[in-house]
Length: 66
Length: 166
Length: 393
Image (cartoon, rainbow over all chains, first blue to last red):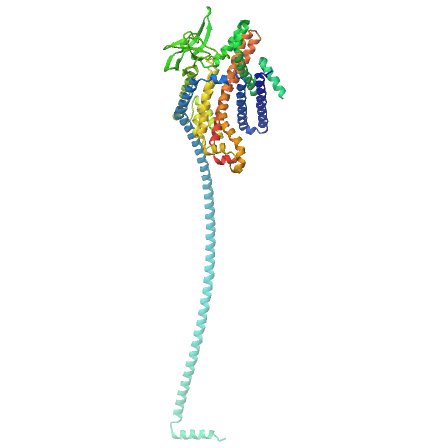
C-alpha cells in the first residue's frame, strides 16, 4: 500500500505552519520586549517567513505532481 | 512540477522580459533618476540649511565669547597700564628725591672744602703780611733808632750790657 | 501545539469557517490548502468530467472548477464575461487579441478565429486549435490526441501571441511610465516638492530607498540597483492589484512572468557580484583553516553554495507565483461556493468570506511585492558585500 501524496502535502503544511507560527510568535515576543526595534524585527520576520514559505511551496509542487 | 513546466509559456516569458527590461530602462531615465535626484537635492538642501543654522549659532556664540574676552582683556590691560604708571610715578619720585639728596650733599661738601681752603689761604696770607709788616716795622724802628752815632753806640752798649757773660 | 495545527487545518479544509482575519499564519495555511486542492483536483479532474451524468450539482462544481482553471491561465482573447442565452449558445463579451506563431515562418492572425476554442483556425494551410489555453497544431477536423495521462500530444508551435497577460503587462508598463514620469516632472516644476499623487508615492519610494535598498545593500553601492528595485516593486504591486479587479487578470500568478522577474534578479546578482562575493562562494572558510582541512568540507559546502545561487531566485519565482495563484483560487472558490450553496445561510457566508479574503489579498498584493523587492535587495546585498563586511561575521 502506498501512502497517498496528500499525506505528504499535509505534513508539509504542518511543518511550514509550525515554522511560520513560531517565527510570528517569537517576533511578537521580541517586539513586546523591545518595541523600539519593531521595524527591524518585522523585516527579519518577514524574510524568514518568506524563506520558509518558498521552501514550503516548492515542496508542495513537488508532492502535487499531477 | 510537471504541471508547472507545462504552464510555462515561452511567449509570455519573452514578452514579459522584453517589456519589463524596457520599462526599467525607460523609468530609470525618465522617472527614477529625476525623482531620486530631486529627493536627494531636497534632503541635501535641508541638511545644508540645518548645518548652516548650526554654524550661525556657533558663530554667534563665538562672537559673544570673543567680545567678552576682548572686554576682559582690555580691562586687564587698562589695569596693568594704570599699575605700571603708578609704579613709574613712585619710582620717579623716589629717584629724584635721592638724586637731590646726593647733589645737595655733594654741594655742601664742596662748599665746606672751598671754605677750608679759603681759610687756609687767608691764614697763610695773613701770616706772610704779618711777617712783612713786622719786618717793615722792625726795619723802620731800627732805621730811626740808629740814625746817629751816639744812639748806635748806646745800643751797642745796651746790647752789650744785656749780654752778660754768663 | 502540533495538535492544534492539525485540528486547525482539518477544520479549515472542511468548510473554511474559521475567523480568517486572525492572522497571517492562517492565510498562509489557507493558501497551502488551496494549492494542494488545486493540484489534486486537477489530477482527478478528468475522471470527474467523464461521469458528469451523476447530477446537476456535480456538473455545477465541475463547471466552476473549469472556470477557475481557465481563469488562472493566460488566454488568447480578452474576455470580460460570458453568458448563456436562451437558445443554449454561449456568448462571450470581450475583444480578440493578435496571435503570433512561429511555425514554418511567422504567422499572425486574430484570436477571433479560434472562437474561444470552439473551432479550428486555418492559417496558410495549417490548422490550429486552442485546448486548455494552449495552441496545438491539428488536422483540419481539430482532433487532439491524448496520452494515457490525458495530456495532449499534438505538436505545439512557438507561441509569441499578444495574450491577455501581455496586454496587461503592456498596460501596466504604460501606466507606470506616465505615472512616474509625471511625478518626476512635478518635482522639476514645484521645486522638489511632490504634488497630488506624488504625495502618496513618494513615501513608498523613500521607504524602498531607505529601508530596503540602503539597509540591505549599503550606503555605497545601493544606487545602481535602485531602478530595478523600484520598478519591480511597483510593477508587481500594480499587477497584483489589477489581478484583484473584476478584470481578474492573473499575471503575477503566471510562472512565466515570475520566472522572468526572478531571472533578472539572478542575473543582476551574479553579474554585479564583487570579488568578495565569489570568494565567499568558493572559499567560505578563507584562511581560518589549512588547505587539507578545507578540502573535505568543501566537497560538501561548495555544491551547496552553488545550489544556493539557483535556489534563491527559484524560491522568489515560486513564492510570488504560488501566492498569487493561491489567492485567486481562494477568492474564486469562495465566490463559486455561493452558486453551489444556493441557500440563505451558505451564500451570505461565502460572500462574507470572499469579501474578507479579498481584503487580505489586498494586503498580500502589497506584501508579496515588498517581499520580492526585499529579498532581491538582500541578494544584491550579498553580491555586493565588501571585504570588511564579510570579516564581521
